[in-house]
Length: 239
Image 1 (cartoon, rainbow, N blue to C red):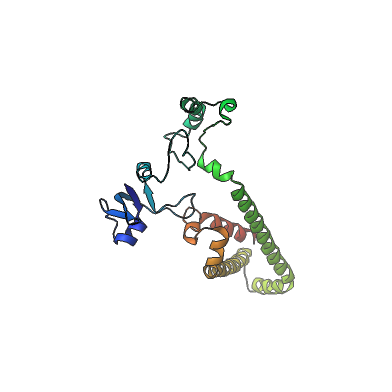
Image 2: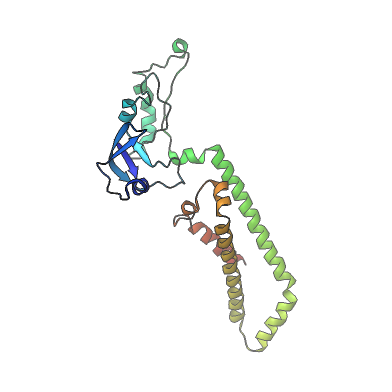
């Protein structure tokens, strides 16, 4: 049996109503579709378009599963309660030793199994930590450079702006009105900057996706967009 993603179902059958239909692999191996699932985004550890049962793998002798081998594959378990993780890890070795005794002197090797939180596994990944550190450092440096450049531009134009503010004051402008004028100018500059950023991202899409190995659709989701929005707000308040 096999489960397929909705994207693959549309590509092959032109519909997601595919339960009971048959897929043939290599012209000989038949699989019955038992259901569909929403396509997994690329911003994940795995993004399968089709999932088949272990029984099918054994049937066609693609893999061997047993206590004497065939255990080198990634597995994911959804726990009812995250708090049960430590309790399972404290008992899992006792269950395994019933079938594979832990005797390094006799067998020359030993096995130990444990479950690990997927978020912790992702955060402790050296590659992920290096990428996050590098991009965070680069982002902070660019933000500081942009802020300092803006401050220098403002300072260099103080004499000219002082004359303009004096004219507004002479014409009866209050401190609140002058401050609101500065806020409007800053907001316009930020909107122009954000527009340029969006333009560059769209035109450099392929290069960006190659660098971070994530599609833009998966990168800029509603769950993530609040981060750049907060940064833009902080820059606005700082400016």
